[in-house]
Image (cartoon, rainbow, N blue to C red; front, side, top):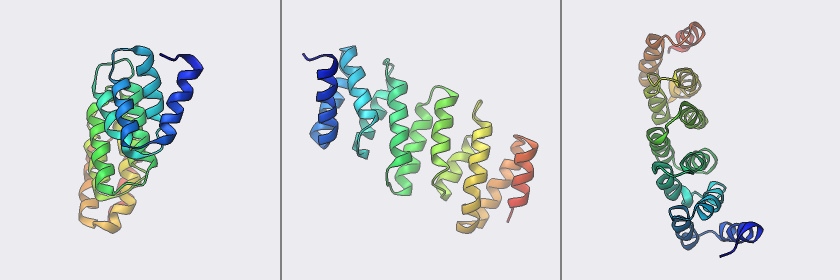
Length: 182
């Protein structure tokens, strides 16, 4: 029943408290029928202090609601900023890429992924080379992640860099990939 500054204060208190009950409460508001509550809940979830808000943000992002884009941004923020196992981070990035409707959303997910080089993130970036609007971002991510993957799995690195060369995104990317080939 509160509004304005009172509502913002209450939602900030819930966000600061955190925990399963707080996330569940935000889920109800974020998926409810009241636009003002959806707005407040998605703002709070987007700046949540732990990774436990991720499932709710993904749920909202997958919907057709007004705040789906905001929720996806919050979801990407979580796998970009929080300590997570590599497999979980790559799985979250893959889900974000499936949900993304616009190139800038996909590119934000790819850029976040490039901060955490692993064989899984390398493969996911490679898979984005053929996605319209994300070719250049994916190519840069493949180059960035590839530097680490060369040490982790030289054969995967060689295959991926060869695929990047064949994608022919730009001459500078192709040249850089050739120089990196193990």
